[in-house]
Length: 233
Image (cartoon, rainbow, N blue to C red):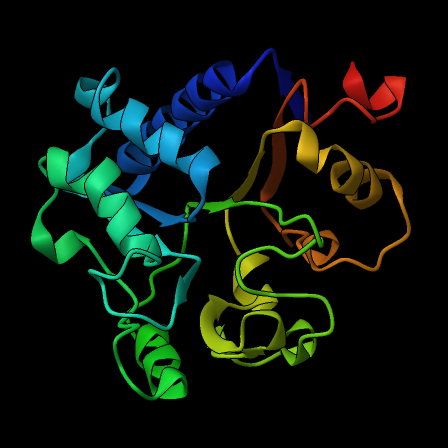
């Protein structure tokens, strides 16, 4: 499913409404909601909206927060996805400390951090993902050995592009989500959005295909500008 919004602000609002709907359904069905968060400026706008405008509509005390990927840095580092999310949302809402399941990126051994994180996981009701200009998602980059992972749910691949390890959920885990939501905004993403959604299968993001769950792409007008007319309806 592809949904297109007029601008980045409307995209964040649409994502917030979807987040609230999924959380309500999960809590009604089983008593709690699980979500994997992503880094980046587009989801940051969503997190700020949830903490501000939609504050009273989220079941904070029954929501468990995970991360689809993390940098190999401490939680107070400027590059930390956890830090961004904490500042934009988690520090401003009544979430029990035990409901926040961050990746321990400060562990000098990235592989050990990945193995540890795998033990904390619960089945995910919603997974938020972004799309890099090279077609990567989470921290699964083109050419990464993680693309071929079939057993591990969390891995710590070396990312040559950034000369560092990253800790990331793998495709077996991403594809087990009840719902996977890609959030993409900006004209600079228009080329890769078209290639991922209309081109041959060669980018990591194209391998995210939930086995039994729902796959949704939410785009703003700028990011969707190059899509064929039938994809934009």
